[in-house]
Length: 300
Ligand code: GDP
Image (cartoon, rainbow, N blue to C red):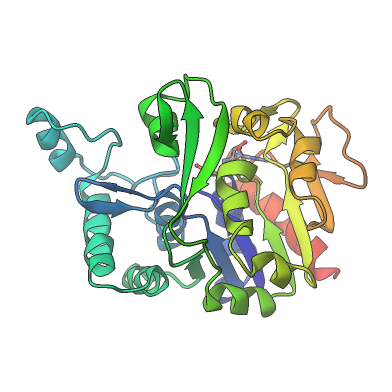
């Protein structure tokens, strides 16, 4: 068994390859939920949705969000009424958000809701939210303290971030299921996700770091040089006091990681790291990288 820590783009690209090179029942994924948001009364969990849709074979892999060939009839109708939905939500995607919202309002745990939805989609992998309680990444900007989605989707990442703040009413805890998955794993992989908005929220859940202590942890950098492969990771790293590079990523995961992997093209040197072609420009490249990571994991 391998457990992956995942956000909603870089690590899912790796998981796309992993599901082709290993037994799918041997994959557990602990998914960031600090980007979750309620929109139009429904519960969007962007990273859980991406991972679930990927494993269900319905993900739109052009965008890495939403369901392939989904329609946007409801979203467009709502806009016609002058009501803003700043995130484009497809109709089938919305059905999942409605179902999740209703189950949350009924008092179900997010872990059980995720299992229920994954079963309906025929997902064979073990997909786990990082926690059952709500935690939100907000960023401090000239507009005040705003939800990360408002920064990245509504403002298209065009405003300065002063700092990153995690907000919750109760400190988030890892679930029993997450700890069991880690304990049952030979290796834990921190995928090439945004260190600040995707991975750190998972690591901050009480119990997880302790569970990782005895595990062989592999991390893959989302940076090549001083830029991430995609997305706003550089601004978030700087606002959190880290260099926006692979070296900064390694510093962010300090003391947790046994093997750090970064790209063969990366001009930055990271001590004791190894290099692979980590640029997953298509499914074949994802499978290739997954195969290399699996053989490193199997050498443990
Ligand atoms: P989010 O939840 O949508 O922000 O997605 P993640 O946090 O899972 O992934 C975002 C990170 O993935 C970005 O920092 C990218 O640099 C990284 N990323 C995307 N594609 C690739 C790739 O092909 N290779 C590597 N190494 N990183 C990637």
